[in-house]
Image 1 (cartoon, rainbow, N blue to C red):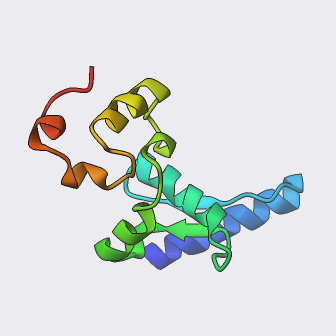
Image 2: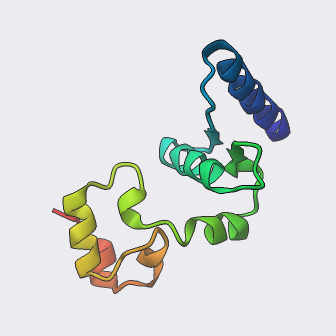
Length: 109
């Protein structure tokens, strides 16, 4: 099923290019945030055909791809929250797993 989703993503990409003349990338993920990060990866990967489907990748590969992405680039993380996360030394997408339990548990108000 998921390879069919990637094919649909490629069709969307080629249709938009044909209709508008604008090149686009397509990101596919199980959540809106992960789909947006997949789109970011599709833009960055020179080998990718412009479509990144996170749903077909193993968890270890997803972690490897997302690890270098700054937390400030994650959809929904604004500048103020990124600054507060930086105070807890959370600068990358997966730093949260290695921060202190106090920083992980509370709200970031």
